[in-house]
Image 1 (cartoon, rainbow, N blue to C red):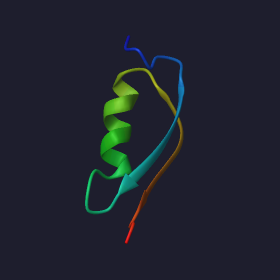
Image 2: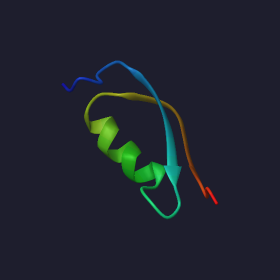
Image 3: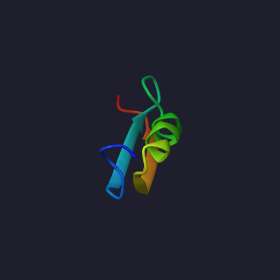
Image 4: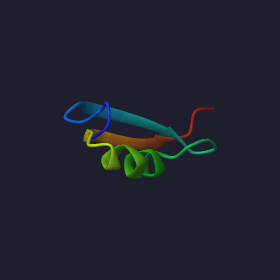
Length: 43
């Protein structure tokens, strides 16, 4: 288990950077509980 095991996480991804689904995949494997995940365009 990782350091985020059992922690609730809010993900804000960026369209031209790292999208939220990519971060979500990585963080789920560490045991984090994803409560909100969205990818936005910050212009």
